Image (tube, rainbow over all chains, first blue to last red; front, side, top):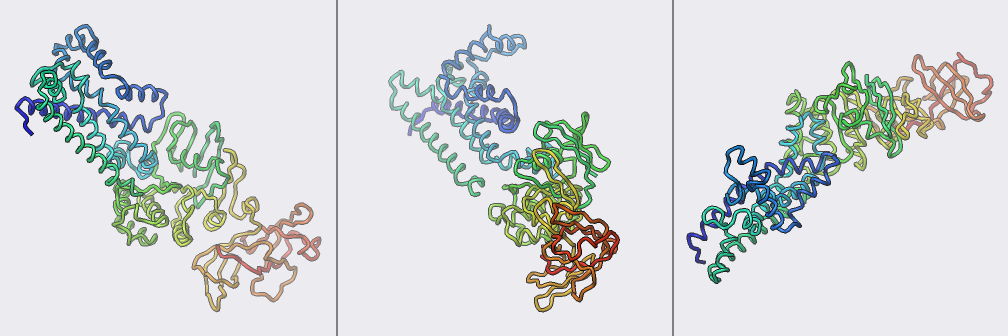
Length: 228
Length: 330
């Protein structure tokens, strides 16, 4: 397989974007999934729907509204201008924010399901054994949810690597800055470089396949909950 | 002393429990027993009420002490061992959050016969082993009040007996929910009967037995000897001898009222005990309830009038003789 330096740069950018987004996503998704799984609230249906929305929404719709919000006349854009921060569209930071929103359901939902499978009783047992709320989360919930959290992180990472429409709308097609691997394939396709497009596409195909096998093994072979 | 006052839509309770021995909560499914335990444990923080244990207020209109600060031990109905930890680490989890010593942990493990399971993960344990580990873990948190929610449901007899025997020896204030009347008779000192979220009645074990479908009374007993399949037990009213295949060092004897005879004169029988009549009450024409005093030990018996000769001649203060023909070891 022959990949040139531009291809490797786009792959590096894809991985950097996916890694950054996944780390931030986990920090947001774990508490959010915990709230959705265990806290009774009237707002749960609304929040769940908002989190799940990117699953069914065309990326162009999400990209369009994010672009408006991040633009100089949008709310986020206005805040950035007031704080003296560069505007987010067509920047790596803008891509990270868009990816976090777009991959949110792929991370939140598996973690939420893992927490539901573990159940509230496990935390209640820990409470009766003298564990304070934070202690319960770190000593009981997260260790038992380890496999689910890793699976969710891998899925979120892989999904971000595979993003196209949203990236194109928010980041454009700037080499070394916002030109990720999926967009590079589209560039090759537009200029009839099918062989180069094929090499990069095969790389992404192989990467996605390996990731899915990894997630499958984690969920069905290593999960201690599946033994009981 | 446990004082509790909750007025919820489905649970309207107010009671004062001495909480010195084992209090059994009885009632049909949905009566509110588990909710009551969860309120005491502090696992239902949404509900308003008043809850005091000894001199401490656990809940009132201003205070809510969270469960991890209440020093309670709770054994749940569905066994909940931490699946990511082995038996030893499950116990260490509780021990690390209490001031229990290694010697005390070792003793608990030995008494509950789990000292050979330490390295096993929870999914490789049997139901009985899991429940003994859950019970041991709960004790490792050094609770001041023990809450047991049908802990022995669907356990084999051996595991149940190990746990019940140890529970009696612990002498910890315990609130115990069970559907098994045999278990209740075996361990309870006091019984609270709950129906539709309200207390129907409460009282000592011997007083409550009549309302739970057992016509008889219970005596605590120590095994003196077991010779030729006949056991001799020391009880508070005297020594009772009867055929017994499974003798137990410490036991409770259930004496069905159908297996007793009241005599107005002493007879030659090894299980005949003198008592003074404290009270006589006739029930439904055919039954006579006698409150008997065996040198300071009170026992109530309900007996068919037809089994008493010259029933009308019985008077308060009279000495009669109670003959026990058979006792069941519980």
